[in-house]
Amino acid sequence: MGPRRHGMSLGLADAHDPPYPAEMLAARAKVLAACKANKLAFLEQVTPENVAAQIDAGVMVGAGRHAAAAAEIGRRHTHRPEPW
Image (cartoon, rainbow, N blue to C red):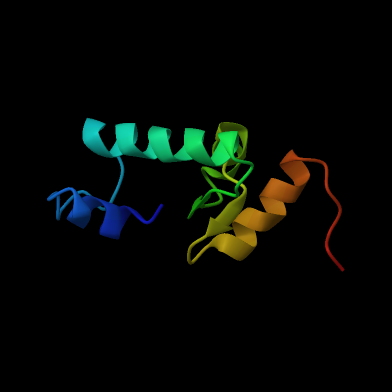
């Protein structure tokens, strides 16, 4: 889920940063549930500050400008080794 495009598609051009409006959160929950039910990866922005919560919520692929730092924290959170 990309918040900028998601917000624009809902007519909420300024809703690109948290906290997100209820409409965006409801749509996110619906898509995330569909992904989980169909065993599909859910991609969303992660930051070092939110990566653990994102993983716990079911986000399986993280993106964003701080993704490398977040990945390191995420690996520790899930007890996975470094990929190299």
